[in-house]
Length: 250
Image (cartoon, rainbow, N blue to C red; front, side, top):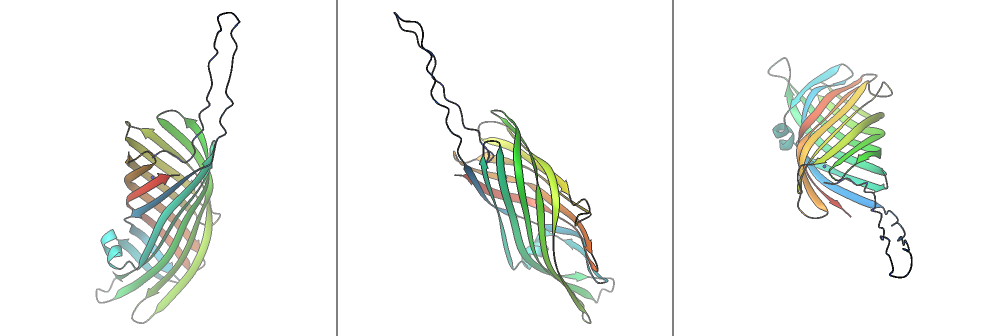
């Protein structure tokens, strides 16, 4: 995921000048008013799933690689929008996917049919704490919103669950220029705190390349973990994989 969406406008000043027969007069131009900035990003996330999904006693042990998911991927959308002014910005990062797969269980002749539709959204308020010419450090807080419609089926049984929940999260984002064109970015958060999930976390690290003044590509690795239980539904899954995106500042 590139310069960040929150950019502080530069103050312009006019230096004092001295006349030949009069004392120096200081003239200062008014400071520019900082303006809103918008950053949009589209990205692909090669997701793999590791963990367990359980519905009323029927549990699917997930060990799905990106190849498995891609083969049965029905639809996917991933994107982010960040709007900022001065030191504050607000980010919406959303991911929707519908996947399915056949999962072998204890009896080699028996498989579980797994199908899942999921919306995952991160909605954050971000505050810029450090900014230099080559380094940015932000702190953020917000919410991770999950909606999952899952179904597990055997030859003799079928169970489904439709769940949605919201987890509070806190974290930090860091970016450092390596040279004029290349930069490094890292992000991490933690949350849940038993409000909904027992625990949720996210980590991302990657390298970016500025392909134009306002546009950059980012290649990295992203992981999101969620440990959520509600009644007979359990979702204890780590979603992880390489990420490739393009972002543009307006």
